Length: 303
Image 1 (cartoon, one colour):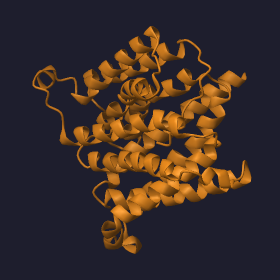
Image 2: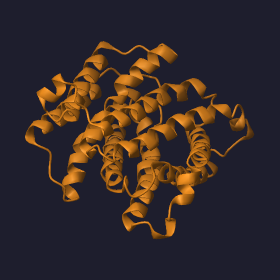
Image 3: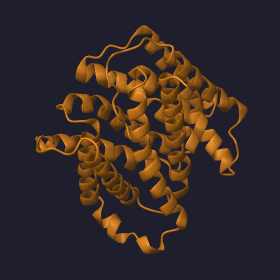
């Protein structure tokens, strides 16, 4: 296999791992407070990424300069995950995954505001196709619901989380001062854990950690190790083999993976009409994979 093929395989695995966090997250969203599970997730992921940083680039003192940067990024990233779990209390996993595919569109707008980044015509078309597919799934292929703009409360909550994620992406590029990605990610996770612990301390103390259902611990370990630490390694590897646009294109494959996760977990499959929306997001992926190459470095995300 060529290096490019290995890169695509890495991102295919990445999208499948991230999709699992939607299906598993919906199963535990009503079993534990969102702030409590997210704080624990950040703590576990920070330990894993911290070990990775020490084993690779090391953590220099210069990385601790202007710590407010990590607080900004940790606050944005923590907001995304907390709102994701609040949204999954009522939003179906496939629908939530479709909302997530709107993130590249919002991120493109945020990138223009913060960095004056310009989106090419081909990528704009692909983003539009992906957004249409996402809206198709969000409204469950119900034209009447679209006309009356009937969106579930969970989807609305999660949308604001995705907006925080979208702003986080260009903010990483703006606030980074040359620190390696693994070190910068470690600082973000530590700051996010601190903010979440302070903000959700009452929920953390009220959680009966010793008697949580087994599925909560399974989900916590999964999202910490696979949907965070493993996805970090996969994105870093793919970034060495593929252009940034092609790395980020795999976001659009997540709703299709979530459908497979749902079927695998014994839940009913979406209707055929809803599958049309998932197909449109897959088409958007193919369009972005055929898009122009770019020399800009991809921004690391930990979903």
